[in-house]
Image (cartoon, rainbow, N blue to C red; front, side):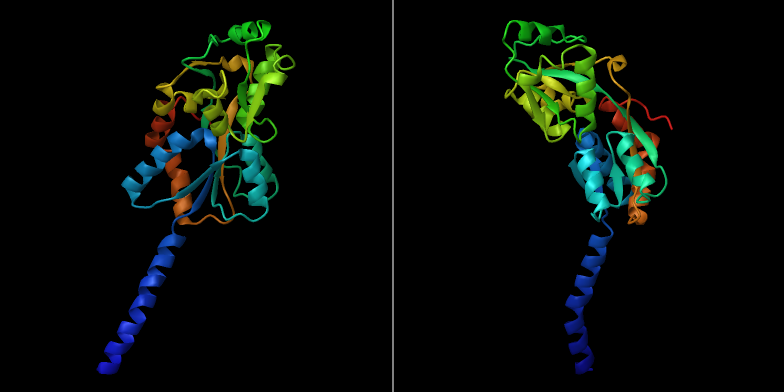
Length: 259
């Protein structure tokens, strides 16, 4: 009897540790574009409330995540800011099918409330500041690996601004960093994700205007399950497509997904 009690007391810490390890393993690592941080954080909270399951989300630029996943990063689900990046994983055989579009991203022109930049859809205010040599810094995400940066470059080119604005451009590593630059006062403005510019924490100190979608290629934000995906990641993937989750995305300015 004493031996049984001794064994149980010795094994109990190991049993508790095993449960903790299993619990950690049940929390999948999710890679997500920084443009959806506020929306996806709310979706994840609602998912946990409704199902009891949780996820661990890392935010960054879509292009960087593709490289990381190709090199073995343990992400089970990837939510990109542009389907071009998820398609790269699908074509490389590193994703489960083509995935699904979960939102349509939109661009906004944003500026701190004390900025001299006048906001308008055709960026005439930006042109005027350049003409008057008053534009010092203007933020966008890095077009080399951030979809919102690619679309910002497209807008600037379509409005004949790309060449003239080069000396004033400040590149964020991702659109979240670009939004920090554009809205914090370190620049006079920038082209960023509407979902970030319209968030409550930014609206208190900055103004924004929605850029017409006719000025850039649609941002079809697609997600894919990787080959490492487990049940919780699969459940979260399905949950993102529910009406409840889609309503949250709409509240942050995203267009409705249409697969």
